[in-house]
Every structure is written in structure tokens, then in C-alpha cells.
Length: 444
Ligand code: F6P
Image (cartoon, rainbow, N blue to C red):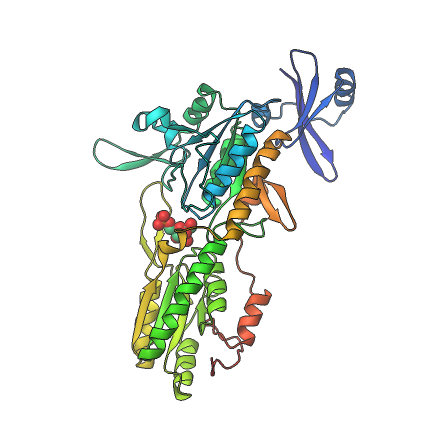
């Protein structure tokens, strides 16, 4: 039972606090984000707390409502686009939880298993046993299934007249967690899924988030799993395009994923030695790219390779959007073909487009992504065990730490324009479709 709550100034910020007494008379002090629960002798806690004249009574207790002092059963869910390494997280988290004698269930297809239980066997849950997670670390995808159209905050529902609306199903979902006696959730996802996690946490669900995206665009973690695999495969594909581009003396434009950040295009483009890289962070103009291509041609290099992120856009232009469904983010695509058509016209040289798209999300994770997934999965269980709540596990070399979800979802991680990879690219003569001074790309 919570007996008092409020907030106190601490090191320049206000800390929200709740004090609870359990049936045995032990007293717990929890911070308002549920990040820590401190067990104190009853007298000491109450005396300290009630001596604070600066308390703000009435602070909403929603964030500490679900704070539990022992965990018996946890759930795991994977949301948004899949990424190689998800199964490694699921395996490590399952084993770490089972080794603490916790039950573990997986929710099918994001939260759909709980929201649409009639559409699945076993009420939409998968019992995650040691057997069920054996031999899955090297497998791409997620054994739980995922969706990028199942946000409980804006759930797409079709009306009888065929139109779609978005409905908030948060309370219903929280009820399902209670019905299934799930004490805490480990939710694995990208920026969209982690924002949903933040919302669920603020609504009272005890949870820990695990960052996932091949785009690597999440702040506060040095890397997300899936990114290394995507860069590795994109580099291999571009390597293969070099020989055919050289043989035909063509321009090849390779489009890779990367909605709002150009990490994949930059890293794969650099690793495979392309001549121009177009990323969302640098609105591009094709004149400098075309003049680089003709310059190369004058020096007997009749082929050129351009790597473009799907979210790149021309100066003053718009994102290349294919469509938008209710309850889903806009689908991007087509920028590669537009760039190829324009470069062909500007240079008179034949151009082709290759869209790597979802190939970058498939396949077996690299050893880096497997290991990162395993570390994140086990760290998420340790976090719950230690009383953390509403945090995201994050890679902070050489360790893994915990970042409040509110902080983790504040903004996306863009490529810094002064980072050394960009500087290296410019030093090597790689063009970004801007007017920044660059060196010659001849001879590459
Ligand atoms: O995972 C992020 C991402 O890879 C984006 O780069 C891309 O725009 C999106 O997924 C595509 O997802 P889907 O086709 O599954 O909707």
C-alpha cells in the first residue's frame, strides 16, 4: 500500500518519490520513474520522508503502481521492423530469467497476441522454455513475430464502411497483462516501439526496453544490433556491383534503408569504396555528383557507384514517399531511381538502380550482432531483477548500461556532419552532393 508520495529537489532536479509499506511492515522508497526501490526500516523511512517540508503532495503514482518487489513471470515482445539479432536477445533473456526461476512468455506479433488473442493459438502467447530458445541465435527474424502496425496507442481498426481509424487500446492492453499475471515486460524495438514502451511505462507497466534497428538511429546507445549485419551485407552487394558497373561503364545507384539517418549508406558506402553517398543529414544537389562522374570519365574511369539512403532528399525537396497506411509510418522508396534518372540525363551515361531494401533486414546476424543481442537480453533481465523500470539497455563500451526511456526516445541519432567517418570520406574524395570542398575521386 502506498502511504505517501511527492517530489523533492535533488542535485538540481526534482525527484518524484513514493513510499510503500508491504503487509510484513517493510517500507520501500521508490523514485517516481520506478528506477530504484530502496528497502528501509519502517521508522527511518517515514521519519525522513515526513521531515521534508518541500514535498509536493499528490504526485501521480501511476509510475510506481506496478513496482513489484518480486518477479514471477515476465513477457517479451518484439515490435516494428525485424532486425538480425532479435532471437539472440530472446534466448539470453529467456535463459537469464529461467535461471532466476521466472516464467517467461513471448507475445506474438508485437502486442497483437494480447490484443487479438482469438486470432492466435494459446491466447497469443508462446511459452518461452529453454527448449524453445535452443539453436536460434544464428537465425534472422524473430520467433515471436512482429508488426509495425500494432501500436496500442494508435491501433488501426476498420469500421463497417471500410474506413480505418486509430484507437487507443492502452487500458485494454494493461488489463491483459494483469489477467495473465505478467509482472514485467521486456520490449524490443526501434524508436517507434520504444516510444510506445515509454507510454506503457508511464501508464503503469513495469518494463525494460531493448534497442533494435538496422538503421542505428537510436540515441544513447553506441550501436543497435542488426546494424552491423546490414552494413556487412550492403558492402558485399556493392562489392559485387563494382565488377558489373566497370564492365559496362555504367553508373549504378544503390538504394539502402535508412529513413531519417544515413548510417547504413555512410558505413557501407565507405567500406565498399563508392564515389558518392547521399544521406538524409545532407540535402543533396546532383550537380557536384554529375561533375565528379564526368571528371572520372575524362580520366578513363567510365563507371561510378552512388550509395543513397532511402530517406535522402534534394535541397529544398521532399522525402520520397511510396504510401502511408493508418497506424503505420510512411513507407519510403524511389529516391534511388530518381537519382539514377537525373544522373543519366546530366552525364549522358547509362545508369541503373539497385534497391537493397529488405535484404538488409534478412539473413543470419553477424557475430557482433549476436553478441550484442545476447548482452542486451541478459542485461534487460538483470535490470528488472535490480528494480529498474522504464529504462532502455544501451551499449556504452566497454559495458552495457541503462538509460531512462524518456531520455532514450528524446531524439534520433543522426550522423554528425563533423564525425571522423564523414571527414575521412571527404579526404578520400567521396562526394555527398554538397558544395563542401572535397578532394579528387579519380583513381578510385
Ligand atoms: O527498420 C527500419 C526500416 O528498416 C527503415 O529503414 C525502413 O524505412 C523501414 O524499416 C521499412 O519497414 P517496412 O517495409 O517493414 O514497413
